[in-house]
Length: 357
Image (cartoon, rainbow, N blue to C red; front, side, top):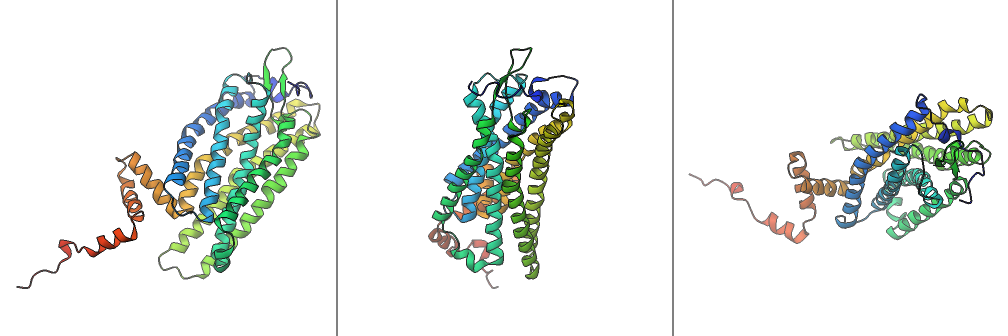
């Protein structure tokens, strides 16, 4: 416990008043929400990983980015059981400082991994739509994998300050040991500049990039003839990605920085921090839903993944009649060209012309 008591005990974790909104959120809403996200998100992401690993034979740049996005979701889900136990145990951490640090780093690391990979997917779609010839020679699969590895390493480096600011503290007047969250520490001298820097470089710049790529792609698609409404569906998808990205991550970063600013402006008045702390805690719950949305995002972006995902799901749940067509399409897409040619060479009996009288 080398980091114990470097700062005064965090009021957000030690002052548990059941009549306060922040305590209700931390003791009841957060574990319930995390548990629901874990129950829904873990099967979806495990199924996605299995489809990526066993059913997809041809990997494109988008496939590599989507696979890494799924791995990022899965890494965040690994932290949820420990957080659920922590909040259900009335914010009493019993697992030691190393695991406390690992959980906080996983939680923080995930958001920026998710943001960076969604940005890569948006740029990839933009290049494929606006500059299709460049897209063919832009990045090979090996270079794409190296880029993804570099993003993992970058996010790990960005999370190192979280490890240095994660503390195990003993609350005064009780034997309860808490695992702190850096932005909710009483002293914001280190946490607020770090939070602002992550917000600018890890969120604001990617948001501007996604906005530019999405708007340019939609503008280009509107110029093209669209007799079968395929371009319309793609425009709606790109617009939905932009809206969801802002909806999930903009309030999270705003509330996080406001919580730090309130500590800097009113350092001796912990009561004034509570509304901002509660807003940030609610956003921590809401942002967890992105792990359930991303598998659906993968289905809409990757046509091959969508067929295999629906086909696998239909095989697991054969009574879902709505997915049987997708299952047949998936099986058809996996046929070898020779077998497909043999099947097409056989003329069905019902297709034979009727005999002349």
